[in-house]
Length: 331
Image (cartoon, rainbow, N blue to C red; front, side, top):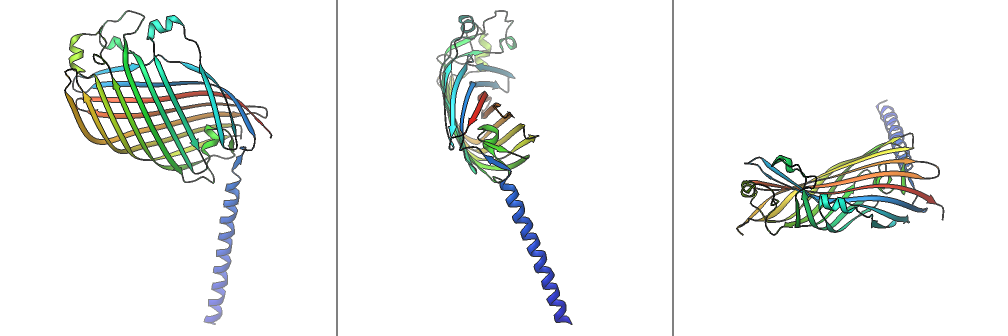
């Protein structure tokens, strides 16, 4: 009787195991249908894109914050995607002379790119800017001029690369929110694990404080150049919210931690160096609408880097905002 009981128990256990296995297999098959691949279609798009590289310098002891920005510029672009390959070319829209008078002239070379596969993704940038203005003069003086204080010789060079792995690639698609050659049918997210590396450098001829400001502020922000080399690992999460298979809202947060070497040169050419922990935050959002004849998309990304060397905090932000109108064609 004990033998019959064991045989019956084994049969029930085997049946339960087969049921669980079939359920798992069914779920995995269902998961694979959550993402529709449109990469075999030719995707043509027209878009506008705005890119910036901003810098803020704060003296924590004096409680003074200096915000420096380039003269913003919007570009008009055209591009395509086919078979996981994409290319876009953008041209700067003309700026008025009055805008250059108010914000100053900015010369720039700004290259930002990305590569997203099913499981791996990467973002990179190379930014070289010359010509900035101070956007918060009223924090220091009674500023009534409609033109902002300008630093025409200020230069900023930023180079960075971040790569990551998508764990839940069967249910979640990074490309669905930010490339649009895939479609995610149901809401899902994934943890991300990656690495990053950045190099930032900024310098001026006579300091970051505009000449219109009081001399005591120049003594409190006594810096004319800094460099920073950072590297580390990042851990984050990404999620796509799908509404009626027509609307998509995607968001990805990828904070990073690691090591960085900071070099700061003061106005008297005194140099300070320090090795310290590194921190950065990569944030990306995507809004999209699917129509049978076309699609619309709005994406934005911000890469924040923080540099600390007492008593100063240097905070840099590489940003990009893009509005896209596109259509897919059968090939």
